[in-house]
Image (cartoon, rainbow, N blue to C red; front, side, top):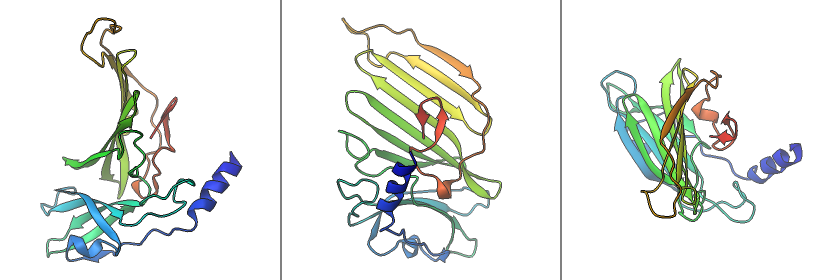
Amino acid sequence: MQILIFLSTLFTMNYTYPILPKTGQTIDSFIPKGHQIIYQKEGNLNDDKVKDVAVIIEAKTEIANLKETDHAQKPRILFILLGRPSGGYDLSVQSNESIMLSDDGGVFGDPLQELYIMGKTVCVDYYGGSNFKWSYTYKWRYQNKDWFLIGATHSTMDPFENKLETYDFNLNTGVAEQTVMPYLEEDEGKPTIKPKTKRFNPGKKPLYKMKDFKFGENMVYKDIFF
Protein backbone atom coordinates (compact mmCIF):
# COMPACT_ATOMS: atom_id res chain seq x y z
CA MET A 1 0.00 0.00 0.00
CA GLN A 2 2.82 2.42 0.86
CA ILE A 3 4.43 1.74 -2.52
CA LEU A 4 1.16 2.50 -4.32
CA ILE A 5 0.74 5.77 -2.42
CA PHE A 6 4.34 6.74 -3.24
CA LEU A 7 3.86 5.99 -6.95
CA SER A 8 0.58 7.91 -7.04
CA THR A 9 2.31 10.90 -5.47
CA LEU A 10 5.24 10.60 -7.85
CA PHE A 11 3.02 10.58 -10.92
CA THR A 12 1.23 13.78 -9.87
CA MET A 13 4.32 15.71 -8.80
CA ASN A 14 4.82 17.11 -12.29
CA TYR A 15 1.64 19.20 -12.12
CA THR A 16 1.04 22.18 -9.86
CA TYR A 17 -2.48 23.55 -9.53
CA PRO A 18 -2.77 27.31 -10.06
CA ILE A 19 -3.29 29.45 -6.97
CA LEU A 20 -6.37 31.62 -7.42
CA PRO A 21 -6.27 35.30 -6.38
CA LYS A 22 -7.67 36.20 -2.98
CA THR A 23 -9.86 39.02 -4.31
CA GLY A 24 -11.27 40.19 -7.63
CA GLN A 25 -13.84 42.52 -9.10
CA THR A 26 -15.39 39.95 -11.45
CA ILE A 27 -15.72 36.16 -11.59
CA ASP A 28 -13.51 36.10 -14.68
CA SER A 29 -10.69 37.70 -12.71
CA PHE A 30 -10.36 34.43 -10.74
CA ILE A 31 -10.07 32.20 -13.81
CA PRO A 32 -6.43 31.21 -14.47
CA LYS A 33 -5.03 31.31 -17.97
CA GLY A 34 -5.75 28.11 -19.86
CA HIS A 35 -8.92 27.32 -17.88
CA GLN A 36 -12.64 27.70 -18.54
CA ILE A 37 -15.83 27.71 -16.48
CA ILE A 38 -17.93 24.54 -16.86
CA TYR A 39 -20.42 25.21 -14.03
CA GLN A 40 -21.37 28.38 -12.18
CA LYS A 41 -24.17 28.94 -9.66
CA GLU A 42 -25.19 31.96 -7.59
CA GLY A 43 -26.73 32.07 -4.12
CA ASN A 44 -26.48 33.57 -0.65
CA LEU A 45 -24.10 31.42 1.36
CA ASN A 46 -23.32 33.59 4.37
CA ASP A 47 -26.48 35.57 5.24
CA ASP A 48 -25.19 38.99 4.21
CA LYS A 49 -27.72 39.42 1.36
CA VAL A 50 -24.86 39.80 -1.14
CA LYS A 51 -24.62 37.41 -4.09
CA ASP A 52 -22.08 34.59 -3.69
CA VAL A 53 -20.88 32.21 -6.40
CA ALA A 54 -19.78 28.56 -6.63
CA VAL A 55 -17.68 27.77 -9.70
CA ILE A 56 -16.11 24.70 -11.29
CA ILE A 57 -13.37 25.31 -13.84
CA GLU A 58 -11.48 22.90 -16.08
CA ALA A 59 -8.12 23.16 -17.83
CA LYS A 60 -8.35 23.50 -21.60
CA THR A 61 -5.42 21.13 -22.18
CA GLU A 62 -4.85 17.62 -20.87
CA ILE A 63 -2.09 16.83 -18.38
CA ALA A 64 -0.14 13.58 -18.57
CA ASN A 65 0.11 11.47 -15.38
CA LEU A 66 -2.37 13.65 -13.50
CA LYS A 67 -4.24 10.80 -11.81
CA GLU A 68 -3.86 8.03 -14.37
CA THR A 69 -0.67 6.75 -15.96
CA ASP A 70 -2.14 5.44 -19.23
CA HIS A 71 -3.86 8.61 -20.46
CA ALA A 72 -3.87 12.38 -19.97
CA GLN A 73 -6.65 14.22 -18.10
CA LYS A 74 -7.93 17.74 -17.63
CA PRO A 75 -7.65 19.08 -14.04
CA ARG A 76 -10.72 20.62 -12.41
CA ILE A 77 -11.04 23.10 -9.55
CA LEU A 78 -14.06 23.91 -7.38
CA PHE A 79 -13.96 27.31 -5.73
CA ILE A 80 -16.39 29.57 -3.88
CA LEU A 81 -16.52 33.37 -4.00
CA LEU A 82 -18.22 35.49 -1.37
CA GLY A 83 -19.59 38.78 -2.63
CA ARG A 84 -18.51 42.04 -0.98
CA PRO A 85 -21.11 44.75 -0.17
CA SER A 86 -18.84 47.28 -1.88
CA GLY A 87 -18.57 45.15 -5.02
CA GLY A 88 -16.30 42.36 -6.18
CA TYR A 89 -15.57 39.04 -4.51
CA ASP A 90 -13.33 37.37 -1.94
CA LEU A 91 -12.07 33.83 -2.49
CA SER A 92 -13.54 31.70 0.32
CA VAL A 93 -12.07 28.32 -0.63
CA GLN A 94 -10.23 26.58 -3.47
CA SER A 95 -10.53 22.79 -3.82
CA ASN A 96 -8.24 21.14 -6.35
CA GLU A 97 -9.14 17.46 -6.05
CA SER A 98 -12.73 17.21 -4.80
CA ILE A 99 -14.28 17.14 -8.30
CA MET A 100 -14.46 14.04 -10.49
CA LEU A 101 -12.78 14.37 -13.88
CA SER A 102 -14.40 14.00 -17.28
CA ASP A 103 -13.33 10.37 -17.74
CA ASP A 104 -14.30 9.13 -14.27
CA GLY A 105 -17.85 8.14 -15.26
CA GLY A 106 -17.27 4.85 -17.07
CA VAL A 107 -19.18 4.27 -20.32
CA PHE A 108 -21.43 7.26 -19.55
CA GLY A 109 -18.51 9.65 -19.95
CA ASP A 110 -18.31 12.76 -17.81
CA PRO A 111 -19.94 11.95 -14.45
CA LEU A 112 -20.39 15.58 -13.38
CA GLN A 113 -24.12 16.23 -13.68
CA GLU A 114 -24.85 19.43 -11.77
CA LEU A 115 -23.57 22.09 -9.42
CA TYR A 116 -26.28 23.88 -7.44
CA ILE A 117 -26.89 25.86 -4.27
CA MET A 118 -29.65 24.75 -1.88
CA GLY A 119 -30.08 27.22 0.96
CA LYS A 120 -26.54 27.75 2.27
CA THR A 121 -25.31 24.41 0.94
CA VAL A 122 -23.26 23.89 -2.23
CA CYS A 123 -24.17 20.57 -3.87
CA VAL A 124 -22.42 18.57 -6.58
CA ASP A 125 -24.10 15.63 -8.37
CA TYR A 126 -22.45 12.75 -10.26
CA TYR A 127 -23.75 9.82 -12.30
CA GLY A 128 -21.87 7.01 -14.05
CA GLY A 129 -21.17 3.31 -14.42
CA SER A 130 -22.13 0.82 -17.11
CA ASN A 131 -24.79 -1.86 -16.68
CA PHE A 132 -24.27 -1.39 -12.95
CA LYS A 133 -24.83 2.34 -12.39
CA TRP A 134 -24.01 4.69 -9.53
CA SER A 135 -24.63 8.25 -8.39
CA TYR A 136 -23.18 10.57 -5.75
CA THR A 137 -24.21 13.87 -4.20
CA TYR A 138 -21.77 15.92 -2.16
CA LYS A 139 -23.12 18.65 0.16
CA TRP A 140 -20.74 21.39 1.31
CA ARG A 141 -21.48 24.14 3.84
CA TYR A 142 -19.57 26.95 5.51
CA GLN A 143 -19.50 26.52 9.28
CA ASN A 144 -16.94 27.02 12.05
CA LYS A 145 -14.98 29.33 9.73
CA ASP A 146 -14.36 26.74 7.00
CA TRP A 147 -16.08 24.66 4.29
CA PHE A 148 -17.01 21.12 5.32
CA LEU A 149 -18.73 18.10 3.78
CA ILE A 150 -21.91 18.02 5.88
CA GLY A 151 -23.88 15.46 3.84
CA ALA A 152 -23.37 12.81 1.19
CA THR A 153 -25.64 10.49 -0.79
CA HIS A 154 -24.62 7.37 -2.70
CA SER A 155 -26.90 5.21 -4.88
CA THR A 156 -26.29 2.01 -6.83
CA MET A 157 -28.57 0.73 -9.57
CA ASP A 158 -28.54 -2.96 -10.49
CA PRO A 159 -30.80 -3.79 -13.47
CA PHE A 160 -30.20 -7.54 -13.13
CA GLU A 161 -31.45 -7.65 -9.54
CA ASN A 162 -33.87 -4.77 -10.26
CA LYS A 163 -32.49 -3.03 -7.20
CA LEU A 164 -31.94 0.63 -6.35
CA GLU A 165 -30.06 1.08 -3.08
CA THR A 166 -29.39 4.51 -1.58
CA TYR A 167 -27.35 5.58 1.42
CA ASP A 168 -27.92 9.12 2.67
CA PHE A 169 -25.49 10.40 5.31
CA ASN A 170 -25.94 13.43 7.55
CA LEU A 171 -22.30 13.88 8.51
CA ASN A 172 -23.10 16.71 10.91
CA THR A 173 -25.19 14.44 13.13
CA GLY A 174 -23.74 11.02 12.30
CA VAL A 175 -27.18 9.66 11.35
CA ALA A 176 -27.82 7.87 8.04
CA GLU A 177 -30.64 6.23 6.07
CA GLN A 178 -30.56 3.21 3.78
CA THR A 179 -33.34 2.86 1.22
CA VAL A 180 -33.90 -0.17 -1.01
CA MET A 181 -36.51 -0.20 -3.76
CA PRO A 182 -37.09 -1.55 -7.29
CA TYR A 183 -34.86 0.10 -9.88
CA LEU A 184 -37.14 -0.62 -12.84
CA GLU A 185 -40.89 -0.85 -13.16
CA GLU A 186 -42.22 -4.32 -12.55
CA ASP A 187 -41.52 -6.49 -15.56
CA GLU A 188 -41.86 -10.19 -16.26
CA GLY A 189 -38.70 -12.00 -15.29
CA LYS A 190 -37.38 -9.21 -13.08
CA PRO A 191 -37.01 -9.81 -9.33
CA THR A 192 -39.47 -7.96 -7.13
CA ILE A 193 -38.01 -5.98 -4.23
CA LYS A 194 -40.18 -4.61 -1.49
CA PRO A 195 -39.31 -0.96 -0.76
CA LYS A 196 -37.89 -0.37 2.70
CA THR A 197 -36.02 2.36 4.56
CA LYS A 198 -33.80 1.87 7.58
CA ARG A 199 -32.31 4.60 9.75
CA PHE A 200 -29.03 3.82 11.50
CA ASN A 201 -26.18 5.58 13.26
CA PRO A 202 -22.71 4.87 11.81
CA GLY A 203 -21.24 7.39 14.24
CA LYS A 204 -20.17 10.99 14.09
CA LYS A 205 -16.65 11.62 12.80
CA PRO A 206 -14.53 14.72 12.13
CA LEU A 207 -15.89 16.48 9.05
CA TYR A 208 -13.92 16.56 5.80
CA LYS A 209 -12.66 19.98 4.71
CA MET A 210 -13.31 21.00 1.13
CA LYS A 211 -9.88 22.53 0.57
CA ASP A 212 -7.99 19.25 1.01
CA PHE A 213 -10.72 16.76 0.05
CA LYS A 214 -9.82 14.09 -2.53
CA PHE A 215 -12.83 12.29 -3.99
CA GLY A 216 -12.91 8.52 -3.73
CA GLU A 217 -10.39 8.30 -0.87
CA ASN A 218 -12.68 8.78 2.15
CA MET A 219 -14.50 5.80 3.64
CA VAL A 220 -17.78 6.95 5.14
CA TYR A 221 -19.36 3.57 5.90
CA LYS A 222 -18.24 -0.03 5.26
CA ASP A 223 -17.23 -0.14 1.56
CA ILE A 224 -18.73 3.27 0.66
CA PHE A 225 -16.10 5.84 -0.25
CA PHE A 226 -16.63 9.50 -1.09
